[in-house]
Amino acid sequence: MAPSFARSTSLPPSATHKKSSYHVRSVSLPCPSHPLISNLEEQIQAVRFWAANPERSSAWIEAGLAHIELLQIALEDFLQLPQTQDTLRQAASVDQLLDDLLQLVDAYGSFVSTILTLKECHSNVQSAFRRQDEVRIASFLKSQWHVEKEIAQLASGLRGISKCQHLALCSDVKEIEITGIIREAICTTAFATMAIFAGVQTLSAAASSKKSFGATRSFKKLAIRYSLKKCGTSEEENIHTFERFEELDECIRLSECFGERVFRSLINLRVSALNIITP
Image (cartoon, rainbow, N blue to C red; front, top):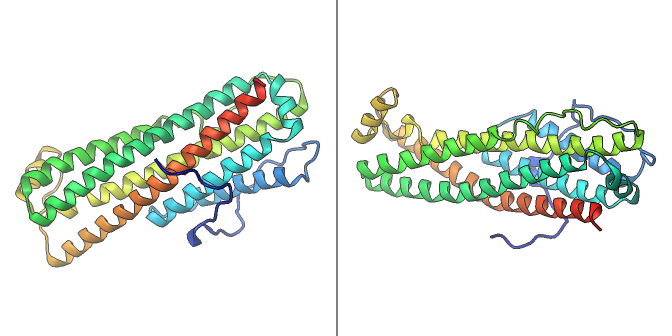
């Protein structure tokens, strides 16, 4: 497990962004100019901008996870405002918000565990590839493909909370505004998380594709079984194969590190919310 991190987080160079074309909902909160509210809205906007410009690279995934972590920190800071806490203690939708946060915590916990499995599978595949051990390549590839399916299922499981659906009906304007921006931060996190998971799956699939292993007899047998086209290999293709290996290695390293950090920040966020409603 990664050690705890300070609340100050520096984004990698790739995480910088221009002004987003997205417009974050402007809420008429009692203190709309409060820096914590402005920061939360800015972080929501930053995450949306990142998700709107997919690159499917390890640097893009690193930037996205860093943005998500900053959003969780901004949301936790927003929860510390006295008016936010007073409203949440009486909000009818607070249980739904807590359930959504728990689902995100579970998703990232599973993601970190799955990344460790992917790391082992990919290491085994690379070792077998260097030895040209076709039987072991085929065996480890099947394991890696299974992990890729698990990552896709994790992403699919967040589809429900990635949409900013209406919360429980309420006539209190202040409650609607405060729970609304919290809900917006949560669904933005879920949407961006789905993009992260899809990006990792894409990089893994590229490293375990027929283009990387078409020369091995065992893979050709698998290709027939899974309706993949046979393809030859060359020195140039081998170079591209190792490039895809290196990109996935970096993706796994960053996902393990930043995924653990987001996981911890989500746990802290939910604990803060629970402490507010059950002092």
